[in-house]
Image (tube, rainbow, N blue to C red; front, side):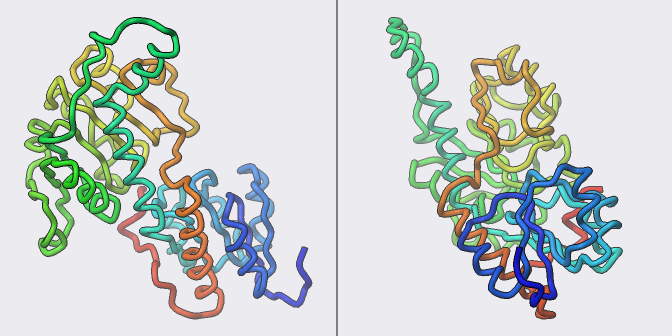
Length: 323
């Protein structure tokens, strides 16, 4: 526990880079504890700032108990685990760290694309088990294939730039993106999601979870996809209807899928996870040492500015909240 010379207290409930925490301790009292939801309700009233990642949920009840709260910092970009509306109603700033993990998430997306078209899991398993299935394991190339990106923010830009190097044609569906945002990029903007779904060989998701994107990919959308197409989501859980995805994969309506995010985390949809044509990881898109250093530096700077009465650079507006 730090000396009482510090008048502002910060609670960090999810892991943050040690170097970032050390910087905060120079000016503030910092407590690092992962509280249960019940414990967080009891303890939050004593803190001026809360820093979280994706594991901690900050519902209205927590915000209303936070009588001293001035700022909530999300070490990452997605804020669907925070009731932003409730925070704004109480004049509590919500800040995040956009772009900190863009490269890491983009590289995981590309890794999934390469793993799916090369059947890497099956290749590894058959080799280790010494089964002779080489003729059945027919790989395919990314070269010449069409990539459809749903959303083209920082991660989407990183993904399309890498896909271009592989010789892929990149389509982008991002209706809220300003026209000039894609100038100079080797992408084709698509006005209709249905068209992107019909023509793409790989579909990757790079959008926030909002009311309009919740369940964006469901039974109808999956039926529009090619039977040889792959679907990849390293953005946010809830954008894909997991029951509909299970049916599509089980019935061979699409060739395969890869998920890093789920509607409930840790992932609980056992029947989906057991499918051979689903590749899955436990929400590790931002879990690289480089991304963790970046996100730590950005979020402590945002929280520090808020507590000192300065203007943070990345204030979350009402457009981010989910309900």
